[in-house]
Length: 381
Image (cartoon, rainbow, N blue to C red; front, side, top):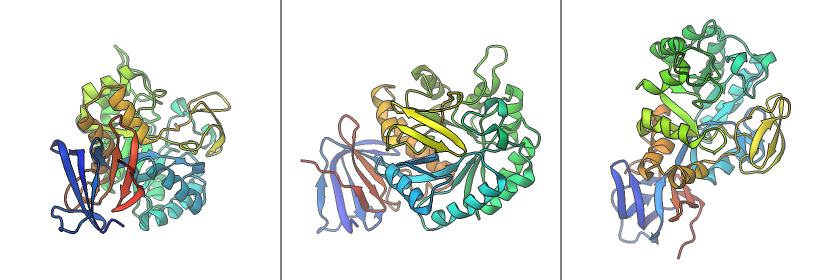
C-alpha cells in the first residue's frame, strides 16, 4: 500500500484538462489534496497519468469466464483486466437457462459485495433471435417483466444493467421495471425500428449495447435503432474499439454525433482476453480465437472480443486520433457515472480512490494502481 506517495512530472489528465508537469498525491487508498513533507516521490516525467479504466461490459479474461467459472476463475479474469488498467469492472453474463442465470447472479453478487466486481450485467436471454450474435437461440425468450425481476432480485442489489431487445413482447414494460429499480436498461441485440427504439428511450432505456453490432444497419429511409440511439442525449453508446467490431469511420461518426460525453468504451471481452488463441466456451457455444479474433465455430459470428482497455485507449489516441481528454472521458468518467460510482472512481480528484494508470509517451501501459496499491509498479528512469 502506498501509505504516502507523490507522483510527479507526468502529464496528468484531470476533469478540467491536461496538467503538464502535474502531480498526484496519494495517502492510503485515496487521492488527497495535501502532502506531508516525508512523502516519497516517484518521478514520471515523460509519462501520462490517467484515471483507472471502468469497463461496464466484460465476459471474462485470462482464460476464465464470468458466466461459468469458479470464484478463483472469476478473480483470475478480474486480475487479468486489472493488469491492463481496468480498475473497476462489471461482470457480464451470456444467455442461459433462467434458473442457471439466477443462481449465477447470486454467486457473482458475493464477489461484488467483497469489492472484486462493480456489479452484474445480464446480456441475454431477452434478446432478438434475428440479432442473437454469439447467444444460443434455443435459450432466448421474450423480456417478461416477471422474469427480468427474477434476475435482478437474484443479484441482491448488485445488478447494474440488462440488455434487452425492447421491441419484443414485454420489452417496454421491462424497461420501465428496470428504471424503477435503478438498473440500466440497455438496447441491444435488437431488430427494432427507429420508432420502436425511440419508444424504448422514452420508457427509460439509457445505454446502447455495443452500438452498430447486433442491430440493423443505418438506412436512409429506415434509419433503425442506430440513428435513434445516436441522436438522443439520454443515451450513452458503448463502443468496442478493437479494429474488428468497428470501422474507424463508424467510431468517428459515433463520437461526432454523440460527443465524448455520451460514449463508453467497453471490451465485451471473453475468456481469451489477455490469454491467447485457441478454443473456448461462451455459455453453451464453442468459440475459436484466431489471431485475436473470436468467432463461433458454428456459423462464424463474432463472439465477443479479446480486447483489453489499454489497447482500446492506445488505438483511440494513435489510430483514431481522438483527443486524450475525450478518451479518458469515454474510458473512465462516463462509465463510472453510468454505474453511479463517479463519487469514488472515474477521475483523479481529491477524496476519490487512488485508481490510476501510467502510460508512456506512446500510450503503452507502464503502471496500474488500484486503491493506493500497485497492481503493476512502473519502472522508470
